[in-house]
Length: 358
Image (cartoon, rainbow, N blue to C red):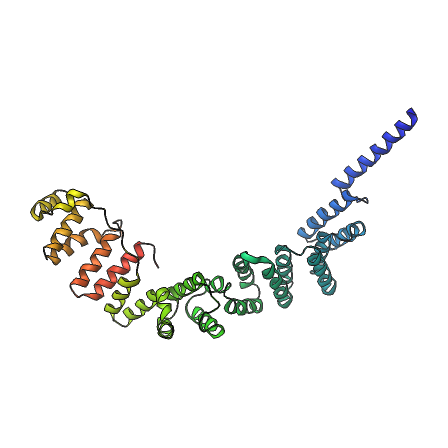
């Protein structure tokens, strides 16, 4: 019995040492530990561009784990630079079949084909990645655009066609464009969907806001004439177009109707009760940087019909860089009262920019 126990212990010792050697080195032994080592070492070999070694390791691992998608994927990654295209396609297909949910798998496949200058195969793999990405499609598509932009004009063109034809991909695509490229892309979007009927309200808002900021104002104005409901989203672009034609009153009127309101100072009860103009003028001379006194003085002057004096008080603050945005808003209103709509529009633009607008 003691001899049996000793033999059993010796066998267990040999097995343990074998597993340790297999796990830490390149000596692969059958079993789960060997499969794990094969997968790990194949990944390292691919990272070090030792593709033949990666291929050999993956083949060894697949002898013991025929349905392991990671081994098929590592083998395919090695086969791409070795120009074993047919084998790589089969292995990528096997890996995707065995791992049907992860979008990262076909995304990495597309990246491998991109590195091998195979844009058509990369596009096919990335199409599958987009299908799997679900709610993260826009972010995944943006990564694709970034990867392809400097490496493959052909793949960039394929991605662009998808961007202008799918409502959920339009914004990532358009966001990277400026000038004439942006205008061409917008025209392509409208050719695919003239009424933007496939776009949700948030998507439509984002698209028309971006168009207002970057696109051709005349084209936008014509589109809004055909689709009046778009004005709720595209008014700023139309207003800028009106201003470019020196129709500043129309631009200012649109800003007043659709633009964001200014957050005005809160008035206390004693400030509402009466505005003594002479007293306020004296206080303002003593404290010319006091916003509360300046605002009360502006109100008193405006109520008294002294628009020029009110404008002078407001501009005392609005022309400062660090002043609250409402001073610029008040300046635009006073210029409008004086029928100087060019200055009213420009003051409102300054207010809009100070509020974080484009």
